[in-house]
Length: 511
Image (cartoon, rainbow, N blue to C red):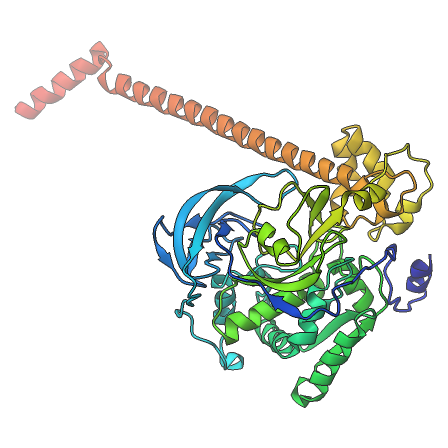
């Protein structure tokens, strides 16, 4: 209500509608980033981003180096995959990935040689301000960078300098509003120079004139660190730090843009359509590494936490590291009566086993005791129509009605009620007094609608092929009929009087 009132009076609200204030449990906020040991084996899935899966370009027994491309991208929405260390490819086969279904993907298994030798094929680009943005964009693509905030959308696509939609403002998303996770917090404290340089690279690439580093007020030390660095470099006066009240899910792109600019992204549009580009802290650091150091994406920072972890912490971890190996370094080896989450407790997904690899989307690994999970997941009760879910929804949906439609398999009706606008933040489930797993219903509905859409697309394509075939058959039939008519006309016997005239003409010619 306050948000609507402020907006109607023309005031910039500085808040977004809905949202909640859960217990943050940032127990690793004071833990310096450690570095994982070399794992006995690395399991590298060929698909770790939104878009097309990659194709392996190495063979069993081949020696590879850290950062070497081992799977090439397919299609436009795709980026390659690189070896996390030097060693030997021992097999290529399907293996489980971080997914609640336990599904598998073809994966490349690498046995380390212990040398961790880097591939040196990419030269650092230190004079990036003098380089063509297209060259830098290609560097980011070949280095395999995808959004490390969880969405894992290929980053180079967002960094296109488009004259039709010029970018005015770059926003560094340092909110990290998900409980337990402190990955971006620790990066801003320990690597502020790399992050700021990454922002400058992005601004040069898209032609932006200003940048905002957005940080929530439960990370004041990170805000102060970034401010101190910017003040020491007057040439970066176009970059500012903005401290925001802590509220979930403020880190969602649309909500953050609304808070910082007072503008909403129209339905069906992207931030670029209102002149804004958002980037995650980890992604920005990876851009710095790719450009300034010539390093492909082979590692990421992961928060390892939860009440079942004896020594919670934040760890620099190679992609492909088995999660069992990561947990063991934090004191957790017995997984009986322990529930594992890939990501945070609000938007993360349950894992069936710790024997899956760290991938580009792994911003957090949580291990919770069964009794803790039982408190958070009670028996579902009938909806009492209290409306709390609608108040908490940051995109102004009516979650209880949407859940009813998905439960009753009225998927097209749910879509007409903007099902796909749901960002699956879990705020509605968090406040529901009836313990209804609303987000689960939404994910089910989206999955079914996607399946229906694919089936419809296949049916439409089949119909088009069938109609085209019928048109082709009719055309060929008409062509054959025309050809037969022509042949008959040419070889048809001539009438008697025509013959006599021809004979007379012939006789005259002879005489």
